[in-house]
Image 1 (cartoon, one colour):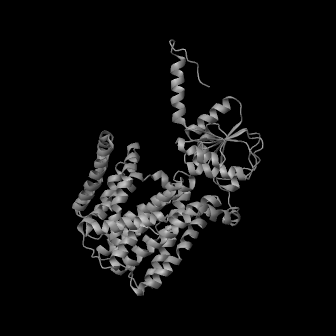
Image 2 (cartoon, one colour):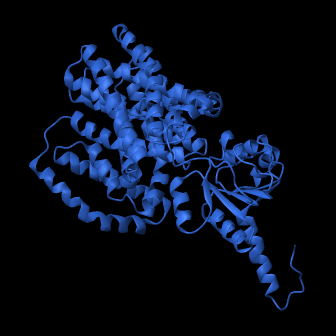
Image 3 (cartoon, one colour):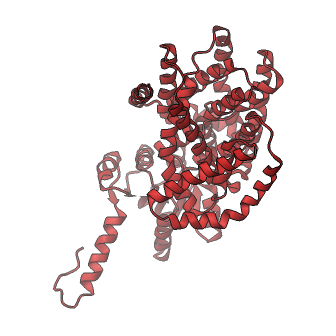
Length: 519
């Protein structure tokens, strides 16, 4: 029976991928399909896989929790207000639907969450995970995840043992746990260590009457902030998603909602655009530009897998009626499909929406104002990371009037403090490239990391009328043709260039060689 479940999950996920729909949707639909044809939900293997997937999800959330990420006003303010407003609205809807206060609160707040897994995957696929709007969205999700953990602890039921207070002492183990992480070294051993800490912390919490999933989160928190924690996060990402298949299959197997729940399902689904519009309005009020507010809101316009996790725990704890689970499962599935479409056509939607958004943002003084002139700038450097900073400093030393462009206000402020000229600019924003005269610009250096973003930026630059030289930094040689087709004049692969420079230096310093340096 297990092989049937996994086979159907693979087929459904494969079909979803073909239609550019999140594979998570495929797994949920697979579970629903199995339920409809009468396949029983009695597999211990699938249940154990699903439980481990949720534990790994919470462990990786813990690994990435950064207080700094949520202390920005646009994250803390928007995230808190949105959750307060949406949670209150959904709680009221639950009460009107006849649920008791506890169920209404738990489900209402859970429906205020946005999907961490879907948003992170979508942003990463579009090369926007490190863009300003991507980091704003991730910050809001981290804030929501913290609230979700509290809800999960409440909805899990049970009474903690007095010994639970002793768990506070786990913080003294942090240096030892980090040392073990560093010493684990190899990829395989690091994965085993991550699994050991996930399950070990979960078992410890369960032993004192707390939810094991909360223990998994705390296990991740004990490593959070160390560079190796980010490496462990990357290694566990794929493993976590594989195990989460079991969870989504199980949720889908809860079946279709009863006919009496359909009107409420349709109503909650109709509120999804309102949820996104509320994000947009709050981001605008917190002084983000229209494009940043729009892109962040698109990323967050979905219901969350955490809603499924919280509702599942609430059903198991007897706090939420079982009939609600199948409705929430289908609601989340439908929202994922909508979000996938929104993500694919976000730029097109923005191009139609930007004038309205510009009017909305004009009431604010935001941190991302686009300049109307760049003076006598000769070189534009797009992306002021390490490569951009080095290029800027070199050009500055040779009196070439460089100007840095970056989509992160914090990066801008850091460069201001170090005496560099840097302006805010989203390289994919058509309004940005058309806002100032580039006739004096000799060349534009594209030093942003993602190929798709470089292609989009090049296209926007050319549409704005710039005919000068565009030079791009690339990670892979196979990216060159796509960039040249988009309008880039020249591309450099830094590793290949570094190898050539090292070899050339060896030749020049070898008294026995008769070779001449290659131009």
